[in-house]
Length: 166
Image (cartoon, rainbow, N blue to C red; front, side, top):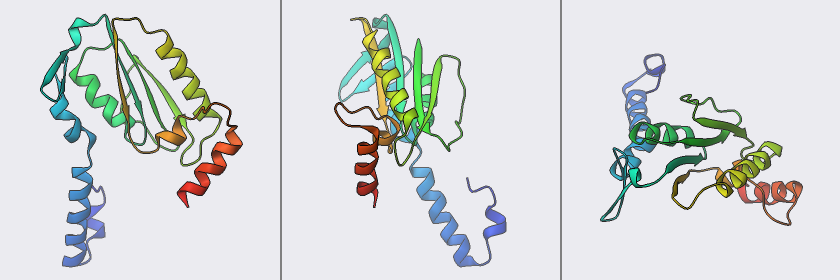
């Protein structure tokens, strides 16, 4: 997982530290945590199985620092009509798919693209029909990446976020 691992190993302690870091990174992979819930075109919620084929359309929305990893995993498990992925502006997406609309927004502070992404999702979900199903996944960073609070300016939202992250 660490690409330059061999150049970083200067001692047995370095090797052990890198093994610990790699183990932590491996355990944080979104697919490991989503796998128990997604079967082929089915979603497992507690003891219930939701057959996604019973819906007219299934859509995937993923927001956060792991959004593209989550969306990529789920898109390989289910048939879906469309999707939206919102990741930080300095991230490179791990996949591309023409069914997805990708946004890169502000993080850790929201910006104009955060508002644009939020408005796009608001409009998108408002077009859903009664027999559509939306899988909405949020990972860390979502409050900055998708920001469109009522009666709060972007400037005010940025101040609040700045205080919270310090």
